[in-house]
Length: 170
Image (cartoon, rainbow, N blue to C red; front, top):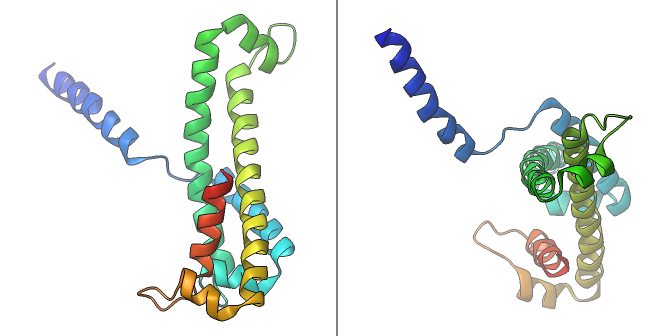
């Protein structure tokens, strides 16, 4: 009995610690990340994509890794948003997101749709920002370098530019 109590107390103490650490990307997050990165690569072309993700042949892998982590965080944020919406109006929530006559799986569907919308907005903002930064870099490389880089890693500042523009748009 004592072992059971110790095990339960330990389990209850560990769960909040895991929740604070953040969500780890699931296989679905990684699969979605690959599609998102492919869309970015096709929209940006290879040169800005490689500048953004800081690699030569491994830029796509870095993109997938970053997007998969973002997708996991987006899923956690979407779950919180859906939980709040469900608590505010349970009947309306079930009617909006539920499937079938009993409105089953409303919460799961809400999280899925919200996560996809957040990710699509992030990808679109990144693509738009990279196009703006590529045009700015092409127009005046010296001014671009003075404004965005180089930093301590001697990068050309393209990632800083994209990050700043994404933050401005969101």
